[in-house]
Length: 262
Image (cartoon, rainbow, N blue to C red; front, side):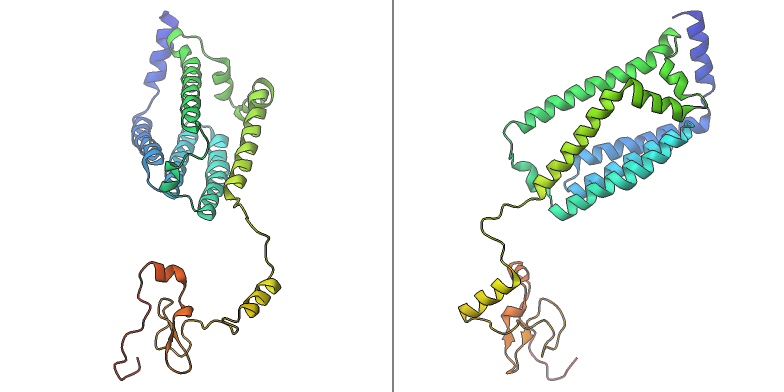
């Protein structure tokens, strides 16, 4: 290490305040815990929430380092838009932990492992390229430009000039991810979609349940959805209880009349 590099490194270490160090270790632990929660959470919704936590911590790091633009973009774009979109997709599709046990595409686990390994190598190489100046004393021009007063202009130049192809490929990857979400949300239809008129005609042809089904609370002493409605003759109607509730072994019969209305 050259004397100039040693002095520059010592100067950087001295300028790190106690409050900044405490903030780094506390928020760093929260970010690592959130990242581990993304991997080990049993529900996809919990994984998305942990990922949002990690992104918010990164935004705090950006603001603490003076990169206000990156901090705002991190919260508004990634946490506020992308992560909320992920949550909506997860809730609409209904993905749970059992889906991870089914491999619909052959070799996707091996491909995911290789892609993750390659991404890790690129990440380590990028971090090493940014920190090599700390050891040699030669500061990276990109880091110097990002730390200057014109940080937004420097970021725009790096994205749209130096790393234009990487930016375009990332956009194509996001489009592919959107198409993949559409494919996951699609359900194969084995027959033509019936209109309301066709459904009504089919019900009349069957001769069963020609009238509308009774709803919970009609002629009943309870308004719970798992309690069947009462027909005009006083008998309970099992058709008024959703089949899903019956499959979950919830009670489908009202309690015996105690002689007094409650």
